[in-house]
Amino acid sequence: MSAKQQSSTGAAGKPAMTFDVSLSSPFFREGVKAVGQAAMLAEELGFYAVQIGEHMAVPLREGDASTAPVEGAGKGKPTSGPLPLAWYDPGIMAAHLLTKTKRLRLIFNALIVPFRPPMPAAKALATLDVVSGGRLIAGMGSGWMEGEFDALGVPFHERGAITDEYIRTMKVLWTQDRASFSGKYVNFHDIAFYPKCVQKPHIPVWICGTGPRALRRVVEMGDGWSPNDGTPQQLKEQMAWIKEQAQAKGRDPSKISLAFSLGLGAIPEGVVYQGGRKYFPAEPADTPEKAIDLIGRYKDAGVGHLSIRSYWTTPKEFMNNMEWFAAKVMPAFAKREPIKR
Image 1 (spheres, rainbow, N blue to C red):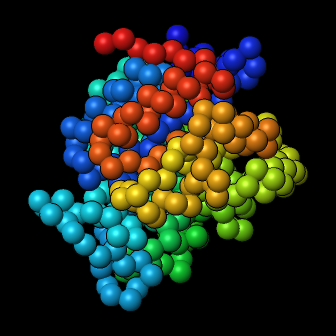
Image 2 (image 1 turned 180 degrees about the horizontal axis):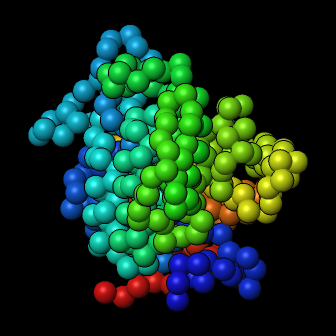
């Protein structure tokens, strides 16, 4: 059964939600072996996808809002301050995880678009889609950490315009046999660009972010919207606006999906990443009943895909949390198709 077929129906034949588990911050710091083991477990448990994000560099300047001090690093492993420090190259890590799995999708959330020229970025993403048999989803954002842009020599205050143009460029490269583009940052004419994506017309592009420009970007070019903040009512209202605007521009609003990230489970002492607190409700969803009720409210608001976050202190606890969710919560919303190895 394909990933698409696997996610088509849920409990009692109702339209299913899909679920992923985030393997980036802070799980990357556990090392490549642990990340691979978690991805294989996610597939075995019936998750639709795993999710990874990116940062190119984490500024350490004292007093900067983006500061991530190395505190208690120990044994050569950076531990989390305001932002975790361990971030692998997303494309190489994606290739590693895709080769370790058979059905599981890989979601980037988010690729920071201004960090790399659009042509090599489009080439890498299309190649990953081909070698994985169409298992890629690209969440794309404009970035937020000014010190990181400074380190890369990318103009921070132009990041919105760069993101818009680079995404448009990638879509041209993915869909035109004789590609041409003329813009402020990118210009090329009459070129052949291959491979094309396995998924048509191209890999799904989810727009990440919640600001006015991000919402306009969803309207104009997003296959989905992936905010990381909002109540069910707020998301419902914002999605209604997105679909209304998209329809006015001649797009089919039913083709724009809504994804969200949600923290479930208890919030213990000594957690690995306090920065992830934003994903968790004020009242912890620490029982299956509470988790099912909370997810149901987001589903009623139009969320079709959830990235599940949890607190943990060891990789074993992280994987135990995955197993708890897959056994106690997921069956209420999604038809599971575990893979036996």
